[in-house]
Length: 254
Image 1: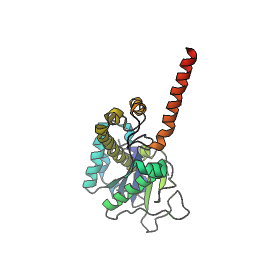
Image 2: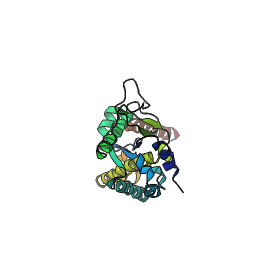
Image 3: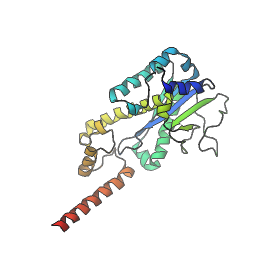
Image 4: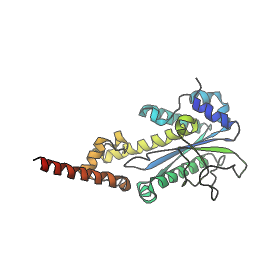
């Protein structure tokens, strides 16, 4: 069976030079960087039956367990090594998240991923700076080479390069699904490394999300340098208020 995400991109790739997919991982986490992936699929990619077969099961990274995501990550790398596609990843640090807020930092990571993928393509595709006054959708490429740039979700006002938003893009577009895989695996590997230095927070399992063991460690030990203060202020203040209310209730009961 042909991957419907392949069919979705191939239809448009027939009309243009290719499809670029962009996605992020870690936007809603309490700790760690936000990471973005970008994958360039030239139109010729869709003319190769072997590429179609190899990518027949590619889907949104959230649909797979860790071992399967690693498999697809290696697949994208191999396709890149063989010159069938080009990919890149970009990261925005905890400090940048605190400074720019998560939306701004996500756009920084996406721009960096796009730039790295472009560099790997040796200029086959170059991100086009957003036209003044054009905050969202991308107009025709001024260089005369038409590419479709798909970013998962709604258009990003702060992303400095032209793009189109595609809600649920990682389930619709094979390029975006590949980008989601590169972002997710890159970030998960980083969080597993952090877990070696901060075992109490269970980063290897929760990847920085607000799982119970993670929240319990925050309450007991406080923040590390890898936590996002902006995200945690409300959570920790709410937790403190809940503890206070609980103590008052207990006193009233006694």
